[in-house]
Image (cartoon, rainbow, N blue to C red; front, top):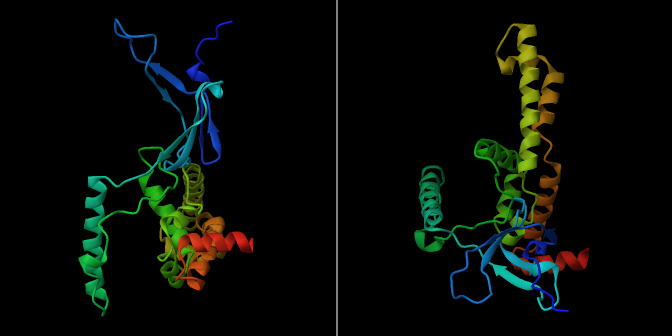
Amino acid sequence: IVEGPPDPRASSLSIGGRSFDDPECEMLPRSEGEDRSREGYLHFQASSEAPTCGDHHLHFGGGAAGFPPLKLELHRQPSAFQRQVSKFLRGYMQKEWLSSASLPAPTSEDVSDDAVLLEVPQQETSNDCGYFILEYILCLLHLSPEELRRLARASAEELASLPWPSQKDIDVRKEMLTAGLGMLFVAAQQTGTADVEALLRKDVQLLDQLREVLADITSFSEAAQRLAAECGDGCDASGSDRKRRRLLDG
């Protein structure tokens, strides 16, 4: 019995402990005189929460005999545009420092030109930029200035391990904000005023309801506070040392 080659559509891709199946198979046309081998592409539909970098494992043909898993190690490098943005932000922050702080700002030699690209969930739509920025602001507002300073000592891998908001979280936040705006409109109609500050000053219950709309970042704040504490207690230790310490303690 002569067995044919495995079906590429039965392949799977393992990313960060998750498996993605049913790829779209695109075969390239075969030219005359070529051998029986064919070239093509496998397109896997992975969610935005799947990490881009790291070790990926391709199981071609569903792990068919003679086709062992292929290990793919991917790295992320900032593009020329991203380096330009980081350089612009560095200059902006330097001017802000000079205008508000008594200490001299770091020189260009003290700061790297490379941007730190974190493996965090990405925006999946073309119109939720502002909501993502708002969600990041809400996350950081739950931390004290000292905790933020300690997080600055963490490595990119440690920061990426925090439960940053995903597209699903943004969708939930948009629904909550819509509900909050509805509460404000109803209160404004009932009282005959459009002054939000006056409404919240008079209606404590409305203030508490709106606070719940914006203050449910418990999972992020708790994880960030734990990491900030570790960076404060072991600021001289490397990220791998702190990770090893967490494993021993846990």
